[in-house]
Length: 365
Image (cartoon, rainbow, N blue to C red; front, top):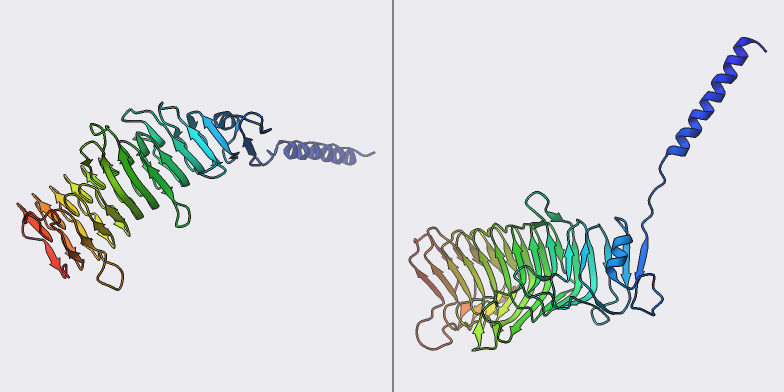
């Protein structure tokens, strides 16, 4: 065998060895797994949701069978957690802390009744909990009922998340402080939400049904009903939707707000918000109250194609604007039958201590 042939064989063997090493070191693709949770005796792999979360990897699905799960869960991975329907699958927080706390991006949760958080100001049925340097994003929450919690849904440093769909609503009943609280969060979308916030003897901590505050911007509240918001002691009424302290450029559209204090309240530097195509009626003070802010647009609050719905039958004013340094737009609304307390102090539109740059365009019957 010539030296040239020997060298060729050695090179060929070396090449095959290297190729084999390369092939064996290529990582195998990770295949998402589905984990099953059931109550004891159900035959499921896990008897608690948290146990399944702890073992799961990013991208996995957790399916929770019918039953009541007495636990507080922390979702710190990108997971889909699917219950067996709001009438069948319940997570009971036992009046302690958050019932469901989400600290990861792209979490999907559906098919549960969630109840009994703690009663502290930071407790909630579902909390999306980020930080200044790490906002929670991309979560989808739909087809859930949340009841008897301090806050129903609480967003803190959470951006671009989705709550409810046109066909899968979120039902919030009997929550104490706020049914939805949004803090330092932006570009979240709420669709098909129904709120009934009635409490008993909790009027010292009872709050607005929906509360946006402290630089919450570019959020959308769409196709939402606030049916009532009061404490039976008195009774004492509280605002339906409250935007406060630099909450700006938010959109409230296709909503009905009734049986609250002020249907919608924009106060203290909360400007450039859009309120359109809503029915705001039967509230105990004003349909819409605006104070110490500028640039809000109230438009097209009537039924499409007709002069019904609109801003009507509120006890005081349809729209009340107080102490505003700059203008607002009130354009093409149907405002009627306000001053329902019959003390001659109510108006369709009432403006006080405000500069005159307020556009009034076709805003009466």
